[in-house]
Image (cartoon, rainbow, N blue to C red; front, side, top):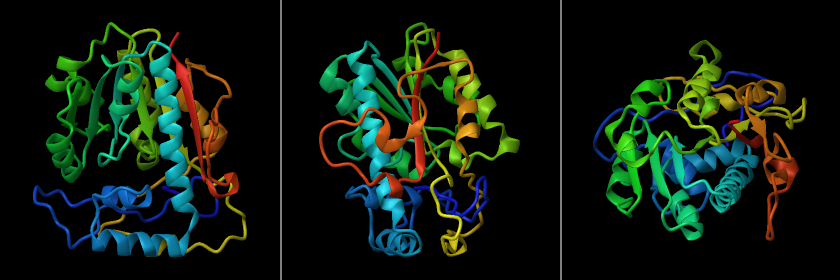
Length: 278
């Protein structure tokens, strides 16, 4: 979804939510726009209108967003079926059925899930709706992994001595190189016990035709926020020291595809992979 247009590692204007506690329905919100793109119901007219502007520039964003959700579902289901009972979903976004806990608990009813997001609107929705046993929502920023890992709700629900799946789906796209995204991932995986897994998806420009006409400057919310669409080799750096599960870091529809409709790979501008900590 968070594609940068032609070129690799291209910075572009992108949205971010205003930092306020009230529910502003007259202004588009990134989490609600994404919620609309993947078929959710927690969105309003402003979000619909922004999504339509986005789709007018790059209709592939809906295919990419939907493919990302399907990849997440497959990865969570696979890990839950193979003994992972703890999940940390960072940058979780608005609750969208099926949620991570619904997928994991369908396999293992004792699975526990911590959702984390820095968007106050997301946190408010999550705290109101994710009241299922074994789940919680915390408002925190991935740029401060120590605060996240030290959060009392996370410490209450997750046992760092046991394997945990850390989910980073379309999150590191928002972290620029000077903010050390590789270091952030390393900090998270250092905290996790052996046998833990990293589930990661990331936007790329690898599949955008060089002559594609894309005016990304029209997609913005207030102050500019830089976004990095990294190429395959750059994304592989996040998996350093981990064992990639087959089929490796691949275009989202190619990661262990299941039965049912999937997006046209040519319209999915993102990679995904799952790796295990030795």
